[in-house]
Each structure stands twice: as structure tokens, then as C-alpha cells.
Image 1 (cartoon, helix red, strand yellow):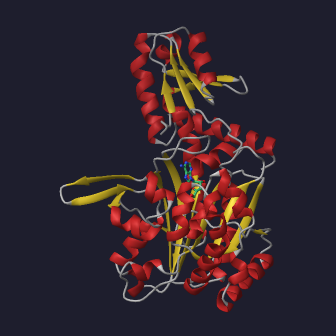
Image 2: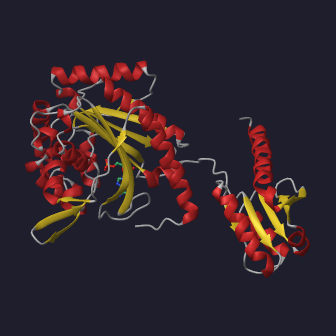
Length: 422
Ligand code: AMP
């Protein structure tokens, strides 16, 4: 679990703003659900035998409730969707969320116990059109956040009957090798052989490489859905790879599965930036009046920040006030207050330091302007306004300071835009 200090939080704010702006253009509205849900929700929807539920949940009992701090966002959104009977008022809903998730995983590079996810869910559209639109949007988001080297992996895990057939095929394949499997996987062979495929045990990995793929047993409807998705991704010019090994670690998925993986090697083994898939059976499970198809994804914010080389142009205060004596402190505070009311970030240096030291601090903070208040300025009701990039300075009447600051900032912004070709 990490602290995010103000200098780093600026990057988080930019990422969040960019994410919100993109999903809004696709019609997503924000949902905010509680951090705590009934433990039973995750056990039933994610699956008792998954790593997340079996080993990683922060669960506790209080009074008569069994509660869990959410390890992911989809189950809580689906619970809210059913609880508020949203299907009765709109046929298709697009929701997004942004917030912390908690999993007691073994910490590693790119793997935390409190991490943050930005995610989206679409309810009411069976796809594959909205699946393609969602995957394309994910690529757009990741690109907008400054990630260049990534690959889109897609697979289909089929619906109910396909998955039952696939389980049988996996059991038949693994059973003769039972003794070679790790203990967890030996148990999974009986309860849920699909989970063997995302085992991290090296003994299992070798055997998994030769396991039958789900594509070989897809029912006709499922195959048609998957073909449709691929055709639409081609039409949207989204490059992708069909990855038959992609099963993802949660039980609720049906049909479409996808992941965006970083290809630069920067994240080591934790190379998935985001993952998602269709979960057409969950809403029905949760007691909705009728089943509602759904699809969603979640993106790991820490991982995106680690690889996004977003050009971090440092931004500093518009005006840094340097009062040269204690007598000037009151005037400096009052002038800064006026500027702040018209929307400018101001800093007032009240440490009683020398002018040189104050201007050094203004530079270090990347301030655009410095307002110097010496004895002479005070006597005449003026301020010396110095441009910290250009170095030019002029005396300005205190009353005229807001206009002078606005004018100088407009000149500075214009020059910066010219320099970057905007
Ligand atoms: P999942 O909910 O497991 O499908 O994960 C979706 C995305 O969340 C992953 O692709 C990661 O980017 C991120 N993620 C999952 N678990 C962690 C973790 N423990 N620490 C950091 N990021 C994570």
C-alpha cells in the first residue's frame, strides 16, 4: 500500500481527468459504490476457487455481517444495477468507476495490496458490436495516457454449454498427468479445471502449454459471436492477437475476454495494463427479474503510470509574492487574495528571507511571475512584476495588478504554445 504525495498526485489527477473525458464521449456515467460489500457477493460471483476469493480478500465479521473490502469493481456495480432495478428504466446502461481495490497478494513490482482501477461496464447489449467498441475505447484510453508499446489480446471462453464441454476436455487432458500437477491444481482438477490454466506454478505451466484450447470446442453461437468481434475489430482497425491461453482469473466471464498487455518489458511479469470480458450470467444470478448481458474491463492505474511517459510539463504558481520586509506582508497577502479570487494560483513567501532566496524558490516552483514588494514599492502603492522566464520587469500600480498579471500570463502562454507548435 502506497502513499501518494502531492507531487505524484498531480500525475494521478491528469490521468483521471483524461480517463473521465474519454469515457464521457462514449456515453458512460460515473457510479460510486461502497468499498465494503457482503463477502457472499464476491464468493458467488468471482468464484470460491479463484485466487482472489480463496487467498486475497480482506474479509471480516462485524455484528451480524460478513463483509469484504472490495477486491474488484464489477461485482459491486452489478449488485447496484440489480438493486436499483436499472434495467426497468433504460435498455442499455454504460457505467464507469475509478477507485481503490484491495487484495492481499504477495507484493511484487506492479502488484500492490491497495491498488486503483478505472473501469467501465455496459449492461443490456449482448454484443459483439459493443465488445469491439469497448476494446477500441480501451486502446484509445491507453494511447491518450502516453502508453505506446502495447498489444490487444482477445479470446472467447464461450457460454454455459461450451464451458461445460471445455471443462470435460481439460479434465480428460490433465487427469493422466495428475501426479505432475501442483497441490492446488490437483484439487482444482476436481472442482474447476479451468482455474489450472491461470496457475503460476511452473510445474503446471508446462502442462498448460499443451492443453486443448476453448476455441476448439466453441458452440456455434459462441463461435459466431467471436467471429463478429474479430470482424468488427478489423473494421475499426484495432490490431489484436487471438490468444487461446487467455482465461483470466475470475469465474464470472462468458464469451469475450480481452487484455491489453505492455510489450516493452518494463513491467516484467505483471504486463497486463487492463483486462476485461463479458459476463452475461451475473445479472441473472443476482436475482434480476430477467437476465441482462454485460461486459466490462478494469485498468490498473499504478501500472499505467509506471509506463506512461506522459510529458509532465511542470506547472507552477502564476504569481510568487516576494515581500522584502515584514511591513509588506499584509499588502502581499491582500494582493494575492485578489488574484486568487480571479482564479490564479499564488504563493506568498512569508519566511523573511532575502530577495535572492525568495526568487530562487519561485524558480524552483516554476512560477511564471514574481511580484516584489520593497520599501519604495510600498511607499508608492506599486509592485515590481517580474517575468521569471523572460526576465523583463515593470512597475505596476497595486490596483492594476490583476490586469497586468493576466496580460503577462497571456503573453507567456502564447509563447509556450508557439514553441510547441500548438
Ligand atoms: P483484474 O481485476 O484482476 O482483472 O485486473 C485488472 C487490472 O488491474 C490488471 O490488468 C492490473 O493492471 C490491475 N491490477 C490487478 N491486481 C493488481 C495489483 N495487485 N496491483 C496493481 N495492479 C493490479
